[in-house]
Image 1 (cartoon, one colour):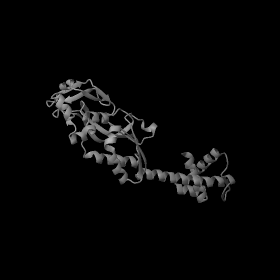
Image 2: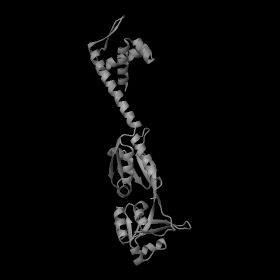
Image 3: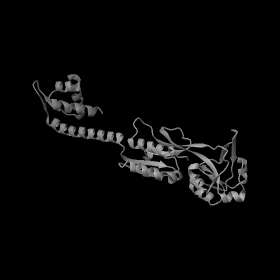
Image 4: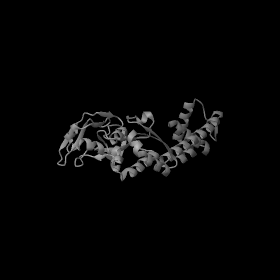
Length: 296
């Protein structure tokens, strides 16, 4: 950056015609200006000015270097303006990583509304359930659900969800309705592999109860498991954002309604830093407002 400062000082000297005039414009001493030019000439290995007691004249090398300095400083100024515009105005390409089931079920409407609201932003979504490295893999942000590990990422909660226990009406008719968590040991349990093998509940009296299930069906995709349970097999314990629509439609029945289950935070995480790009800020604000009234 010192070279850019010295180039800027050099251009100022040429424009004003003398070290003293440039020093007054830059509000520094003539000696300071002279030192900057001396350092610049040392770096270049050539004289930029022929100095006499009456005038300052550019050398042949000085004329050529001055032309390049003008272009370089103009390019730098343009780059600063462009970067500032991206920082201040919501525009550019936004690359997001997000879990498969949550995205498939709930992000389509959000993205449609967001892209309609911000026509200068394009979005690339990568759906996967692994913990991506945002910086190394070039993501602007990721949506993550549940407890966040310690990291150098910034995070903002954009929504919340709870685990829900549910089964299809046909299954409950055949096998009966569990009344307590321990009753689940007599049922066919369907386990969401990204959840927990131990299913946690809090009784109406506040007592914590845990069931260590032996699942007959286990998978790492909650949407598929939800479909299997809706067709009549087993009891499912998944985040409500997966089973909520089938519960609302009556295809699944929530069980143990007097027991509380674990709450999950839904977060937008992004590289921590002083300057968050406008495209990231407006997406997080939009997602927060979108999910604010929703119950997942």
